[in-house]
Amino acid sequence: MVEYIGIDIGGTNIRIGAINKDENIIFEYKENTFKDVNTSEDLYNKIKNLIKMVPNYKNIKAIGIGAPGSIDKQSGQIITSKNVSILNNFPLVENLNKDFKKPIFLENDARVATFAEAIKGKGSKKNIVCYITISTGLGGGVVINKDIYHGSNNLGAYFSRIILDGEKISDSLISGTALLEQAKEKINKNIQNTFELFKLEENDNQIAKEIVIEFKRNLTVLLLNISSIINPDIIILGGGVLKSKDRFLLDVINNFKTKAHPLAKNTIIDTSMFEEPGIIGAALLAKNELNKNTK
Image (cartoon, rainbow, N blue to C red):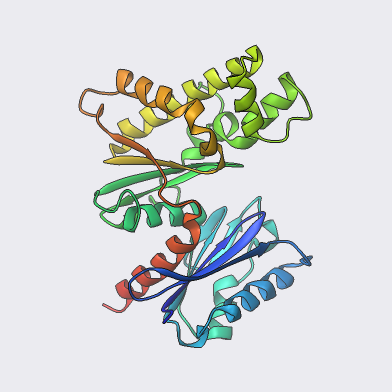
């Protein structure tokens, strides 16, 4: 029997899933986010229709939603999002409350993914869990003692804004978009994805090697900064760029161990347990928030 619904709103796909009382996913579906969508109302109606696809949806306890960008949890709105700007300042939670008469919880998608890893993934037995996703953009979050860390005004663990070289932010240096832009500019404008870049590096393309060396250096610096500021038990890496982890991750871990504080050298650096942590993370968030609110 479904108990909680999780929705992951992405710039390419929107995913929905449901978990039972044992926190296992028993329903999952995805479709293109912007297919037949021209307005915020169109996308809202798509979200409603997806919820109605979940078996026994009328009897679920709560719905959790992960969305990219800055989230105002009090108003239940996405304030700024590049990937789904069509929903910026749209009363998403308010409307879903009215239409489904269920508690709705909205959170940043990277924090939702962090929550999935902290509750059910490789950080489930750790107190301080850090998650970094390296995909189209760079994002992440921190969960401390099973609670998402937000900071004083919701900018906590904003890893994409960390300065790495005295001027540029990490998102402009480490993200999949940043790597692809470098590959197109310096190697071939027809390169389609980061997998092609790492393949060229593997085949001894000198320019690709230079791009990957710089990527590894910047990623190492980011992990060192996170280690010094947060001192987590585990740092978990996810996202599309990690599909090429064999080309860089071991070097990054070794460089980290060489340069980290002696007490941080053994910080666990691992890859995500979930290929798509957003769905289960959003559903678990709904369960967690509902339980906190009813205590």
